[in-house]
Image (cartoon, rainbow, N blue to C red; front, top):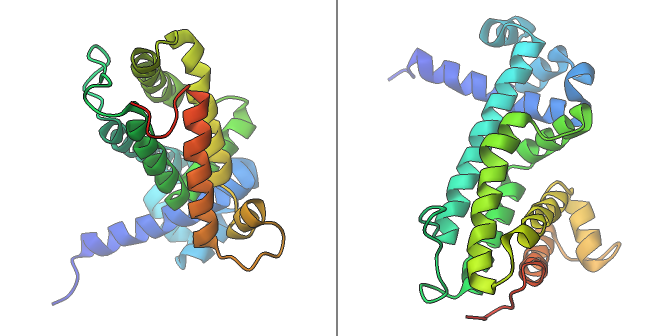
Length: 224
């Protein structure tokens, strides 16, 4: 049985978008080449134009796909945190706060590491424009940070205002490690030329992130 035409079209568009994410993450919109994107995706330039209209249209599609990924991460983190809503903080008696935060850090780290092109594209957008995209910041990032800061305030007794920057600093820390190459991550974790592989380095960084972020928000591992 032959594959449906629309399935092939969707696969082609995904391939083009993934190629475009890598290119735009490396070079930005101005430096990214539509021809190179087409070559890397193993399609013609005409095919890129057919699906996305122009390089600018392709860039907007990448940003849209990136926002979908950010939303997916937000949903995963919310599930990991057990958040029921900003008006109903999860109290310590429901679960050990440190265990909840640890689970969220591990989910966030693994998601960011598995979606490095998305994270790198977001960082490139910040470099190009001097700030996080307004939609990401106002509709996604800030509400999530406010919600998490409120939960942490309930758990730790610290003011939510003092925890907002701790939450954001935690995000910055995860992002910086997430965009590292396998070689850099190994060098950072074990020193230059260490025989340990990328998986060992990622696991070591993940454990360190858990300890560091728990300390930043005023919690310790195993603390109830």
